[in-house]
Length: 361
Length: 246
Image 1 (cartoon, one colour):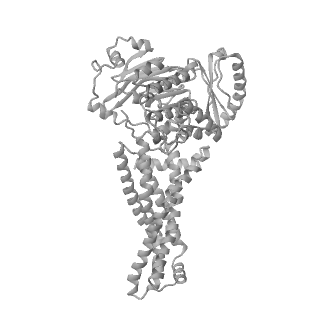
Image 2 (cartoon, helix red, strand yellow):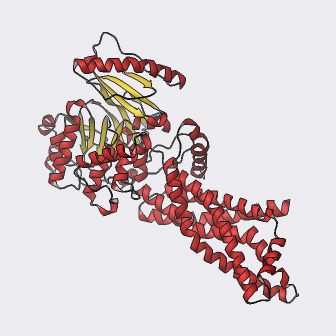
Image 3 (cartoon, chains in turn blue, purple):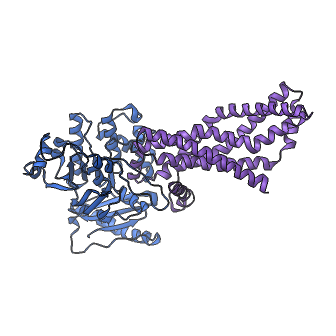
């Protein structure tokens, strides 16, 4: 893997890629931080990654950084522009005798927008929860940013989680905090930014989702669609490299759906961000996707570009994307299947942690 | 029980070990919880403690009058409040008011995916949610117990002064003579142990809610019952250790 991780002790530079001056600037910054980073890494007994091959030109890479100011360190990443961000290999998840996910494999590359679709209870949310490290698979592996997360302890996975954002279906806003405090939460917890800087970032993120001036309202004072947009603003607060979205446009009016779609397209343009979207909204899915996967029967029914999916001869795909009641996809999830899905148990915390028992369908 | 032990170990990690690795807990949330758990419970605690003080004094007067030993009423009020009634009754109030509220709040957060959202944001729920409540309870329950003791003694004084032939100075001197510092300290130790029991049981119940609103209701009830039983059993154990085995 061509990835360089350098742990530095202070200061950060913006992500740069492409142009010669920017590359030179980045190289200088990089050299300075190599020294500082290796010194700091040695002091803190943290592992510095392998240096990239010298014959590969820097212009072939995206230079990125991610912050971990809680530990007074930052990470510079140099990855190939088409680097694989997510690798799912032969993923199996069983509940009792039933395999909700049965040997699923796919990759997500930098800058892609992968839409995962499928009928209710087909395992989309279970798939998503394996990708964010909330659940452990029965077999198989999930690699995020080149790191195997299925065997990671909780404190290790927190480091990976700082690099992605997640938009929950319900928004999952903290009811005790205001809209502004919700968006500011990742910033106050993981950075040392001043309150003024955080306020500016919060305003900017809320403006992106069309909620300027809503900072002081509580989540129960705004509509479901607004909550979802605040959830999106919160997911983007740390400028993540990867965004997971669970039904990002459900409950939104057509105009706001278009706004959220445009935002997703804007963020993924120029390969700045990668997105994995679980969606039932076919209009939105075809608008934002660069690749689509349809799940069914615990496996991948179809995979391809939006055009390939649209022209797929598979009758299940055609039934799903056209929303027909008649077709090969069963209308009802059996009682047994439903019961299985009610016992999704995400991973426990590292070491001395308590166990959560989630219920998701 | 396994979840409860894991929660306790996790708490110890975040309070005792994590600060040395640069992961400090924030002070602001602790003060917010102190206001909720302690300051807002003060009127209820005061009313309860005053009633208990009055009741103790009246019962003591009724029993001791026949023996001609009314002068010992302040002794009885003082010792009973400091050693037993103060810590136990105030813990009962806090279980009913704050313990149940904590269980319900965390349970609601669990079913509405808020806790999962915290995890995905790399924010540990124990560090963010449990540690402030735990530290606030550990400070405020003993503080409420001291406050309740004062108010209870005031209740005894009210009965002795207005219904019996005590004067204020006599009541205070007699009360102070009867109790020693260990009576106060034993009550304080009890209230610290009760605080630990109450908040960990409440948080554990809330964080392990399953189901929707029904699950939250069941967890809240379970937290109150379990905390009450655990607190009363622990009170018997501590009384045995402090005043019987010694």
